[in-house]
Amino acid sequence: MQDLVNQVINTLRGMWKFRWPALIVAWVVAVIGVVVVWRIPDQFEASARIYVDTDTILKPLMSGLAVQPNVEQQISMLSRTLISRPNLEKLVRMADLDLKNQSKADQEALIERLQKGIQMRTAGGANLYVMLYRDPEPEKAKRVIQSMVSIFVESGMGASRKDTDSAKSFLAEQIKIYEARLEEAETKLKEFRLRNIDRQGADGKDAASRLAEISQQLEAARLQLREAERSRDAARRQLAEARGQAPSTATLPNLAPAPGTVPAAGVSGNFPTPEIDARIQDQRRNLDGLLQRYTDQHPDVVNARRLIAELEEQKKREVAELQRKAQAAAVAAAQAAAAAPRTATAPGESLAVQEMSRMLATAEVQVAAMQARVDEYAGRMAQVRQQLKTAPQIEAEAAQLNRDYAIIKKNYEDLVARRQSAVMSGELDVATGVAEFKLIDPPRVAPRPVSPNRLLLLPGVLLASIGLAFGFAFGAVQLRPTFSLGDELRLRTGLPLLGVVSALVTDADRRRERASMFRFVTASGGLVGIFVAGLIAMIIMNRYGA
Image 1 (cartoon, rainbow, N blue to C red):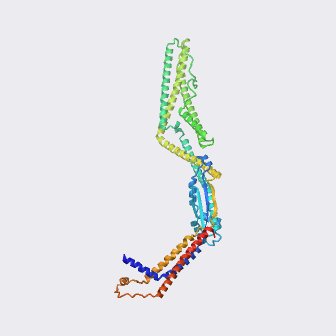
Image 2 (spheres, helix red, strand yellow):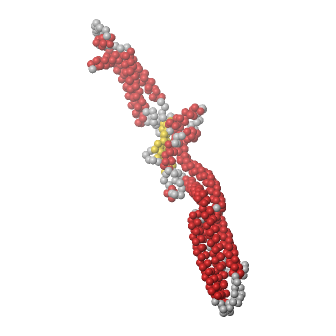
Image 3 (tube, rainbow, N blue to C red):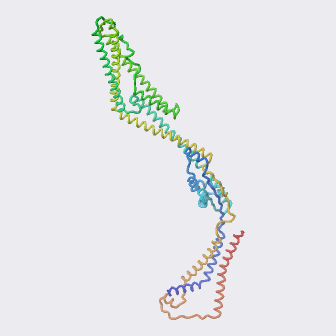
């Protein structure tokens, strides 16, 4: 520890010998530092405060009808991206900053300074923004802030409208695409229905359901046929018994229907077609539902009416076919009854026999009609059985076509609704705007420069000069070391020390030493005093104005 103390003391004594060069260094550094500080140009700060009001009355009223963007997020993003190169280039033109820029490099340097110098931050609230810019020229700084305020307001007002126009254009293109796809899907579905119109079941029933339904109808027709046959057999037995009990065998007039005619009670003009009737009713209900939502010119309405007309035409053809078969069967039965030999009875029994003959003829006609119905249902059942082999593929194709059509139609309707919502949103923005920009503090420039802070820089210059002076003295000691103690010299050199010669200090030496000390203190104090006086003068000037 003692060696360290001795070393420090020896170093300080050596530095004291270089006090005058160190003092000169301090003065030179101080003078240069003061000149540099005073030559730093003053920076004037221009500022403005803007409040963005995002609350409007129409937005709650239009909720659900128009798209309402997140205005707070949009304004926040706008504030962060405001200092972009396109906006800065626009600012340079608006503030006339490019008048002195003669080259591309000067313009790039100007844009870089603006990008670093312009500041925008929130002030107290979420929608309160402050813009700041510093420049040696007060008017230039003010023009920059004025241009930034204009760009901020214009960007906020035009951003949503631009987005709305882009959205409407995109939706219009998508609607055209989906409209073409919807027409193509409708054409495919129409062609499929026309191609398989005989295989389409009522109420959306598949082939298996239609097979079960026709099987039930066939069983019911067979039951009716058996009933008609038993009625005919009973009428035939009764006629035979009546003829066997007749006392006279005289030939009666032929009371059977003439060949080529059909009794009125045997063939009815109203033949039921339950399958086609059910499909017609289903299509009519579908048409009623479509007319409640669309006009008569809508493709779905036109298609439904066309299917109803085709089903009614098919019903007419089937009824005509059934009537033809029933009439043919009735004519055949009538001809058979006319060809049968008849014997007359006694005058008192001819009316009963005649009535029974008519009943038998009617029963024969009914049997023929029921047989035609059974044959028709049997043919339908065979046809459905044959169709059942290809029904899964057709039903899968129909399901896919209906699914694709439903999806495309839903997407088309959603796009049309979204386009209408976008149109209403654009009109809402035109009427109210995204937000209202209120200029709280207009662009202004502080009357005094905000930088540089010379009250802080000048003490720094003084401390730097003193520090460099001490550094110079310490470096000089290291380059030209001196030893004030013999022991230290012996330790440094490693040589034997023969002796130490003391200096004899006279009164003249003491006077010279005191005069030198006085000059040194005066020069050092003058350096500090000048800085202190300068700081006091600057404080007074800043407080009372200069």
